[in-house]
Amino acid sequence: MKRATSTVAPNCSDSLSVAILQAVVTIVAREGFEGATIRRVAAQAGCSAGAVQKRFPTRAKLLRAAFEVVVDSALERAVTEPTGAGTLPERHYLAALETLPLDTIRRREGLVWTSYLLRAAIDDTLSDLPRQLDQAVHEILVDELANAQAAGVLRSRADPHPLADALLALIDGIAIRMLYTPAGEHPKLLTALDAGLHALLPYQDSGWLTDQPTSRDR
Image (tube, rainbow, N blue to C red; front, side):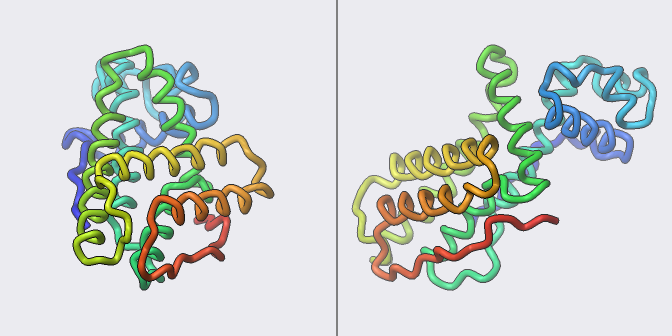
């Protein structure tokens, strides 16, 4: 798979900057973006408001940098080969599972992602990051699908570009529903994911995995 380039700025890599950005993620996941004021982020990170503003002069830059941390984490999972996968259908199923809020870390990231999208919908200065992530994952999927078609593994001859968009829509929809659905109902959503992948990706080798765990707390 392709590797993705980190989006986090080099000057955000010192330990206090990392702590500040993690504080933003924690607050946003708990309370939404409105709760992530400079003062509250400083308190969460254990530093002064001045220390936050020295590294992130405006709240908009602070929120954007924090979201970049979430984007990097999502991209890393998108390009990492899933463990335990043999056939191409297995790899795609396990890769889809990696994007779902099935453990504490990914649930927190999912909440931040959703909060950021709501903000980006009304703030054009924030909307480029979600588009960049969509484009990066879309390109990875298009390459995977085109290679599978060329190898005769994927029976569908559909254009891989809209097919990749359909896959993203399926996985994003399942992920959002899992954020507000009780954990006891997640197996039904995983069954829906499996059905959607079967419909969109008819493989010659139909070795789909349908018995995956519904959580993997880290």
